[in-house]
Length: 263
Image (tube, rainbow, N blue to C red; front, side, top):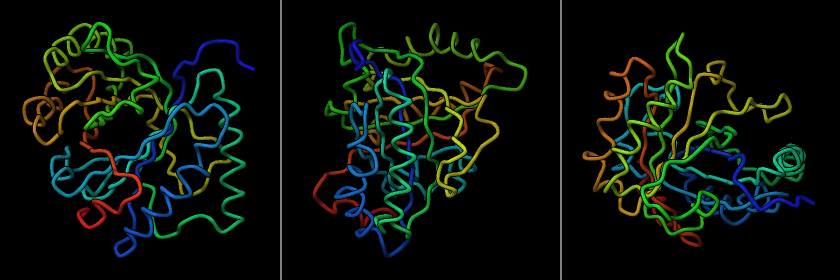
């Protein structure tokens, strides 16, 4: 037993695109079985939540050519899972066994593609409010929107320099008075050798980082003012570049809402 209080350690970020004509079936399979059987019943899971990006949201994605999602119209569904820092190894071992068991039991769904599925390790968070929602509760809080950004440190640049720029210059300015209550910062975890073969391996992971902004408003309403210009701003520092930025809204569990609006 872990005797320490819970603490966010690792997350699973899984961006998936159901095949055309299978949207409803995929949504029902995922939320009615796989969301739980594939992750939530595992040891150390703190929380999980599903998000969706319909066509109007995907049209805001940039840059249009991205190694994260080569086609901006793919990656309609995003599932996020929080894993307790003290149980990361237990959950990882369980997950590797569980996915094999689910395959053997015929409980997987072939008509979908993994666009970007990866484990990320939590590094730090930036918070708009002095006493706001802690990161461990971000998925359980009723945030109306999410913005995911993946960046890559330029070759020859120390990642710590990028972190300092965000922490000392960008986050204080960007979060003050914004719709984003927090931005959580992550780094990729190397994909285990025994992970499912349909999960892409990426050699540039060591220079990449993930930022998750949790919004109290609809991303459509604030995108231009709060997020559309970040790519140019980051590139202008000479430290890193933005690989992918995308807005999402929560799915509505128990319904097929949004399945007809993905494309």
